[in-house]
Image (cartoon, rainbow, N blue to C red):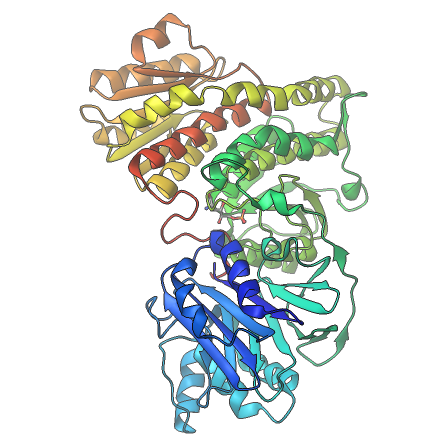
Length: 607
Ligand code: M6R
């Protein structure tokens, strides 16, 4: 959601910023822009549309400039127009600002600044920062920005240039992520690591309520009170190849096919297949005795959390509840030092989940982060962490991080149950044995792609698609529906199959596709009965099943997608795979922009 890049060094800055913006496109945006600084002052170019639309205009920028900032904007205040695109500038074009997030009190600030004579040229909340810094600047840009952000309310990340201090960029963060990268004689800043891969050799995430002053020689961090902050940088471990499509048409398809590895890596450090046990040493001394558990998360991460709720309640004798993070604060969760809260987020930066973490901590709960990004805000603010090892996910629609989340949550459940003594060593052994086979099963399952392409072709004209399942498959049905609506824009709903007669059956008409997740031993006959009901109304039954040859399935299903038989944690993971491929290929038949679906952002940093 919005992307920031910045560079100061000795190289020509325009191509560096342009490449950085392209690498942040996955975050979601609807306009883009760049400002650079040279002896003539600040020059900028910006426009509504895609980063590639900006390329021609970039020729108007001074090619020799070596310091600048760039932005992809996801519109919040004001439409995605050229005027509202960032960078925004002050009255005299001497200060340029790019900004992610929302300045919630921008209205009173704007009115005050206008009363003081400042002239505004956009509808954005961002522009107030440019004018505020202008009004506070007295030779020291860092200090002026510190005073300006102290007056701003909301969640934001900013990068600011001033022609009065042409050798530096000042950045600040509250809530929205910023990562600073360094290489010999050059300093970078970006909203996320992909924009720095192959350029920076070390990185450091800026903390909340911190500012940094970047020059070619390095950077200095202070907090919003002006105190120096020191923390070590870490070397960049991800490979630049991981952010290339590697021969696939889309990142999403590549990431779907990376799942055997993503799940394998996630499990590798957490299970010991030789002695068939689980290990999460980071939690050994971090978890108190607990008497209930909440899982907080959004979107796909919520579906993984709901799957964990189903899996964990079979092995942990305490109340367990998955709650959508944005609702968590509005409700009255029972929080105490005996509450365990697991915050699930691939990015580790989702603002709603972060706010739920803060709410949980305020209530005295112990918070475990389950994230894909080490050092992310949710990781830093939690008491302990369990990491997914899915690798960078570029496609806006989550795929490999979903199955990695269920894998990691599955192991976390085993760990908690084993520690509490509610799961025997032999039960753990059995589950670990199954998990060790899971990467191979994933590869096997993804081989159904050719037949799924045909099914997707038949489905891509649909107006509504229902996804029905029971038990632990219900969250997977929700995820199947979310994937389809996100990338194909077809209306889709996931329901417990038992709920069909209580409402959704009204949607079923001649040919309405209804996707059933049918698994041996999971309310099997009842789900079959629901299939009969859909068939009786001339719906189009698509059965994703581990019993593809069963006579009832052959009789009722118009299309069948086989899934390898499994149990425990592996089962929901395997059923998720065909749903991802079905959504992907349906979107391809409809010709939508799979990797950057309309209106969506990869990391949602505004509430
Ligand atoms: O980074 P997070 O896991 O916290 O993100 C949560 C949701 O925003 C995310 O899963 C979203 O629903 C995706 N677009 C799903 O494909």
